[in-house]
Structures are given as structure tokens and as C-alpha cells.
Image 1 (tube, helix red, strand yellow):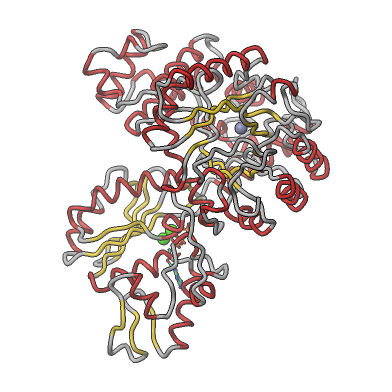
Image 2: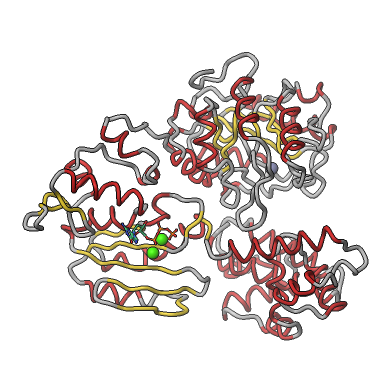
Length: 578
Ligand code: DGT
Ligand code: CA
Ligand code: CA
Ligand code: ZN
């Protein structure tokens, strides 16, 4: 999505939510959601379409909605929405953040139990008033309570992708005042979520940097404003810490504020062992008289007798010993990736046509792209019937034969792993596909034994190429389902089934910890985006981030090879150990 369109999409969805909560109309919410999807898929800012006068011609955006978009785009507010908001208690909308609760449920909780906030909902569940409602039961009540706790616990951290957006804007905002500038902290280490943002600036005029910092748009509170150190809270709830240092300390400061804390502790001890002192200003002699290094991180690591350690590895997981022995892995890079194997199109729940996905893959200089729409049981995702799947295979054969594109287009499918472990298409159809991603999209709450059986059954199907988003977790929304990673990773290794590292920002699945665990089993991986729009192919960087944090090299990654990972059984996957 074009970032400028984000607020408009939220605005349209909020209107739909409120209309649905109040139940005043059945069709208007659908219209607003459709318009939101249209705006989300626009390649350019909405302002351009308003200027060109083409806004009301977009699919699903009629006269009434286009007027609202224009009002919001030009004034930053919408009278209609403010009126809607004032008609319901303000706490109701927060309930929509709960995984178990949609707008219709919120409406019923409000009308039938007078529930207007998270606290009241929790109380009502604890007093078993919710399970008395028609269509609700003890189980639902239990699940609502769990999602309240989960939401409360997780809402304090931000997605890495959200941090990236703010960091990029902040760097743009400050760059006129800085010699050098970088986001440090967990963001630079590419952790899956970030607690706050840490920005390091090298400048001779710290005062002007601070002046500029506190004019950042979207500030809610200025916590502190000092000579070299300031902190703000943004309206989104994200805190930003800023440090300004001299050029000669930039590397030492970057190192210190990139962390992790445990990595820093090990580095400082190593400095002490060598009669040196390391802090955020420099690496110096013990008495602090003479600086040994400080301008760059490379200098500091080298003066400590270490290879340069990539930020993603700085988690005190053995990287300092490895760097000392000259045995750090040569981490996989985004530029190593030759193709994306997990892409949805407007044949199912994606919003771009096949051709747009291919062109986006070409623009990334890939050698191949795999189309993997949903299978028939994924009803919400408009999964393809067997007939439609066959038509898509033919369509992609035609596209390849046309010679219109330089890259190879593969026809795969993201096939549901059904509750009994069977794959969602008949064998004959599966064998016509170039490859099969098997994913769990239903019945997440099985116990660990059942879920392990389910996955192992799916993996015993010779058509399965890739295990998709293997744990099913969605950050801040749904926890991983439980299964024996030992059994599943062992089976993946022995059968040569690839484990997906899904780079969709709210999935990041496998995450870094599980990547490490699977790597120890000797598994091979595929890095993909699960794109539902052609712009999302750029999420590959998040899959790469998890891979790097899991110490993977290009040789561990099937789609870092020029041959696409398709013919698993024929042993053509060019991956280490296969
Ligand atoms: P976060 O924000 O929770 O996602 O995680 P970080 O790693 O960004 O942590 P943060 O923002 O508290 O601090 C940034 C870095 O500054 C941290 O990774 C290491 C360094 N740092 C902060 N406090 C300390 C400390 O007390 N001792 C040491 N050695 N380093 C610290
Ligand atoms: Ca931080
Ligand atoms: Ca911080
Ligand atoms: Zn999926």
C-alpha cells in the first residue's frame, strides 16, 4: 500500500465497523470495506486521483464515498465519521482488536449486556454473563478472556515493519541536521517486534538536532529534551529515543545502542580482558586517556580481535566466540534471493492480477515467481475449486508459452492441511502443480499430539514441497498452535520438505528461534512473502531478517538458487545436505 493512503483505509474501515456495530444498515458496511480495499490497492497516493478527478471512477468508490475521501484528504477529518463516533461509547472500538470479536459481536455485547469497554467485557466473562447469550458458550467466553490477556500483553510492542516506517520518516525528518544517522536498538537487530525506537545521530550541532526532533509530526508527549539525549512518545504509542554524539564516537554509540544488552556485556568483558575499556563513547585504554577506536563499529570489533558481527547476530548466542575464531556464518542477503514462492492473486484473496505479480517479480530481478493461491476449503479466502485450479494451471502455461516475460512462472498452490492431515485437492490435481505449500488455516486449537499427527500426515504426502507458515502465529493476534517441533523438523529434514520463513510482517513464521532449532536438525528453508498485493513482494526483507537472525547462509535457502525449488522428489533442490 502507498503509505499516504493508510489513514484513508483506516477511516473507511472504521466507518464500516461502526455501521456494523450499530447494525443500522446491512449493505453500507460492505460498500465501505470494498472501497477500503480499493484504496489499499492503489499504486499511488489518493491525492493524485483526487487531483485528476478520477477518484469516483475507482471500483467501489461512488459519489458519496469519494466526497468523504476528498473531505478527509483535504482537512484530515471527516464530519460524518465524527458524528458516527459520537453515537457509540468510545471503548467499543477497542474491543475490535480482540481476535475473537468482530463488529457484530461487539454490537450484541453492547445492546444485550451494555458492555462498552475491555474491562467490562472481562468482568462479564468472569461472571459468565456472556455464555448466557444465544450462540455463545463457555468455550467462547474462555477464548475471549484469553484474547483480552493476549491483547493487553502484546499491545505494548510494535511490529518491525511499523518501526521501519517510523524510523524512515524520522531519519528523513532529521537528516538535514545530521552528518550520519541510523536507527539502532532492536530495530537494527531486526527483532520481530520492537519496544521503542532508538535513533543515533552524529552532529556538531546537537542543539539544532534536538530542536528539529521535537517538531516531528505526531508527537503526543515530549518526555525529555536534553543536550545529547531526548525522548518522545508518538500518538501511536511508540516511544522514540534520540542520542546525538560526535563523529569520533558514532561507531561506539551505534554499537552500544544497538545492543543487545547481553552482547554488550560480553563485548565489555572482552575489552576488560585486553586491558581496555568500552563504553558508548569509545574503546579506550583502561584509564580512558587514549582512544583506540570509536568512529566506526568495524574499528571497535577489529581492535577487540573480532570479525565484524552483523547486528542480527548480536544476541549473545555464541556470535562472539564464532567471531573470535573467524567462523561467523556468511549470512544470506536479500540480493541472494532468486524468486518468491508464496504469492496470492485476485483469483483468490489477493488484490493484484497474476501479471502484476510477475512484473513486480521481474522488477526485483528474480529468475522465477511461484503463484500459490488458496485451495477450495479456504472459503473466506475464496479458495479455488478444482475446476478453477485447473484453469489457473492452463492460464500460467499460456503465460509462460507467450514469451512475454523473461522469468519463469510456476503454478503452485497453498493447499489447506485439513484437520485429518489430508491435503485439500485430489492427488491427480496435486501432481499437475509445480509445487505444493501445505498450510494450516483451521482448527488451530488441537492439542499438541493431534496437531503433530496432522502435520506429519500432511508431510507423508509425496506432493508436499513446502510447509507454509509452520506455527500459524500472528503477532498480537494469535499464538502459535502447539506441536512437537522436534518430530516435525526431523520429518522435514528426512523427507526434504522445505520449511517456510514467511515474511508477512504480522507472521514472521518461522521466527528466528525456530529457524535456529530447525537448522540444528539440518532442515532446508524457503523464504517467501505471502503477498496479497504486488507491492508486498518487498516484504522479502522480513523473511531475510528472520533467516539472518537464525544464522542461515544462502546454502540453507532453497530459493537462493537459480533453479526453483520444485521437484523435491527428483532431488533437484540445490540446498546443502539435500
Ligand atoms: P526494545 O526497545 O525493547 O525492543 O529493545 P532494545 O534492544 O532496543 O532495547 P532498548 O531500547 O532498551 O535499548 C537499546 C540498546 O541500548 C540496548 O539493546 C542495549 C543498550 N542498553 C540500554 N540499556 C542498557 C544497559 O543498562 N546496559 C547495557 N550494557 N546496554 C544497555
Ligand atoms: Ca529500542
Ligand atoms: Ca530505547
Ligand atoms: Zn496461509
